[in-house]
Length: 431
Image (cartoon, rainbow, N blue to C red; front, side, top):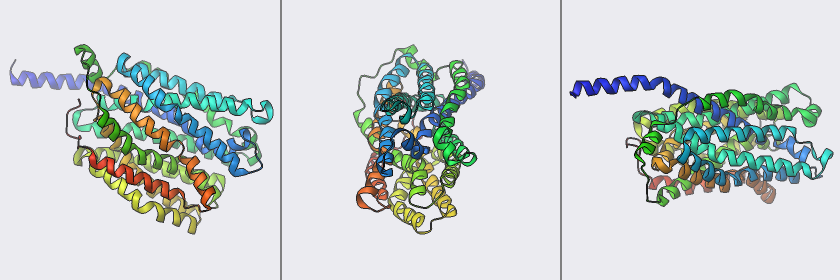
């Protein structure tokens, strides 16, 4: 075949693939939005949930119990990463993504239906924790599966941008969750919110499920996965070094993510003097900024590489965390809270844009979903899921609302070391 014929064949193949790529990205994006809306609503309503499920004369004790239940969901994430990730590597990304979405939606609706403590006693928090465990199991497989799915569908020069859409979808799910919680808190009285209003955002998770399931069930698996299966290619080497690198650089990513985007509404209410609706709206604005900024950072990483942007992010958290929290407490107002959360959102977007592609590019296709999900989920389970709990505990122990900044700074130090050890993979072929 002549060179011209080969080129024409490649162009024709690429054009024919475009509709499949669009459907695949739509499946990944919508499903991830639904998943993370479901998963994050709990964090935004932690104060109300504490009152409904963990009654106590001490508000801090009740809040710690609610955040402990929040963190328990993360303990199940590594198991979900291994099980659902393995399903994705053996049976296909599509199968794994359908399973994770179904489990997440059912457990979220379950939280919305569980009676409060005053109705069924100790069974209430037990059922709540069970639903959080199922949510965590689902999220453990979803993150790696969706990331692998999007990166593997991407053209080689756009993996950063396509991968960033996964993380933008996570932020988008959080954005919708925060907006839903803020809207309900605005429209309902505090008494209505405490009695039944908090259930509405959870029950909405069931409404979002059918479309997500339809889209994911009617999409093809990735070309990279199909190629590996056709060739029956299996890697014999265990990528321990890559797994450790992925684990290390995820530490700041997850700590900052759950501190800035899940814990902040609680922090600004308790320590910055914001009303519940104000705290949720300022958080929603921060989420809107990060959702818009992440794809831009992913696109930039396709040009300049993953490492420069990720290093800028970890160093900014190292230097700016303390002064930004200080400003939030010193100049307590909605305007300052919005400004601080927008700055944090841009710092986090600089990591979250190139991050998905960077972690996906560390692993071979035949084990990408399993290894990526496991390394990421372990780091999230240990350091991120309990970030709100640790922040609350640090403040309680030290008496200083600035104590959480030292957790952020410590995470930044560890992740800086991990990021420095990474090879630049932006312009390399997927393994």
